[in-house]
Image (cartoon, helix red, strand yellow):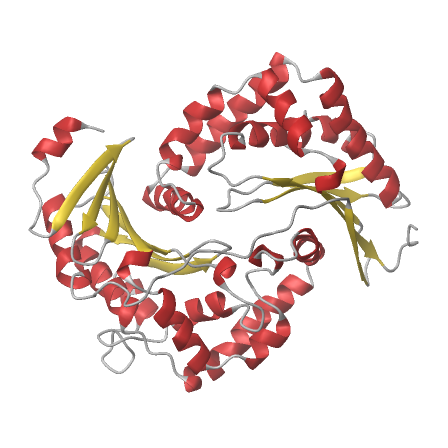
Length: 441
């Protein structure tokens, strides 16, 4: 905690200062428990406003999958004070001010954001507060938006990686809602209605289930005054917002899935269960992923791409709230069997278990991580986005602590997490099989 900032911070009545970590100030609106994160940067006269709701597809149940994503679309259809009728339609209104406006949905969160000139900061705060509790959710608007939602669904279905990824998560998880993808299942998407979406909205869209992040050029006292003025009219949720998910039974053996589609693309996916991002092993696991498959000097790239067996290697290793999966994707070249590539991936993992990794390999991925972090945190929007993901996993300070914790990882840590998590009984193997190719049995 920065004690100097704690003493000197001047606050409007009703705001509580909590702490400062890595230049980010943490506040709370006392009346409704809205969390507020502020990071000032006056070098450019722009500001990013982002509201993160602690609701994602992990909060959905079968029969209502895709609700979080569809609701995200609906919250651009207008609200009490910002709508087409009064000339303040959500996205259009802020875009006319030079703003960049959008929203995204993921497993653990939904966020709404705009980056705009600092002169329009109050308008952005007012808009986000208005749609928090006063959004229009109508069947007529849903009808016009549904073709857009279904188009997104079809794009995913037609993308080999997304199609395989969706089935691998569904195979790896049976009880936990990570079983279904954020876009949802087609049957649920096509049968949703405004009543269902309004019920979902009225369950999760409250200030005590949200975090407001503002990054950029602003006057702190004025900003906090805006937040109190507009968000302060909302009450806490009248019910308990439960974040308890279905308990996933322990996996007791390798799981397999095949996706067969027309085309020439062939992919091998090898996934392993890994813990929540808040777990102390997370940093070593992510560096291990880099050693295995990130960059041309990675082990799997040298073994599979340099040899011509695969065109590329991609590792999906996200930071999520609950236990999830790290997946190694290998895109095979013509006439190379899926089983041969799977075998090589497993061999490389077993080699690390038996011989470990070198100091040079570990240092390479540490330097690469450092460079990627510097690039990804350049600009107010990128900073807000990175903080948003830390909020989603359940600890916003993860954003500031990630680099230093990554630098502490040793080769012994890499060996330990490989043996602990990269085991057959916790694995899921997936094949995407292009039907124009010979199907590997």
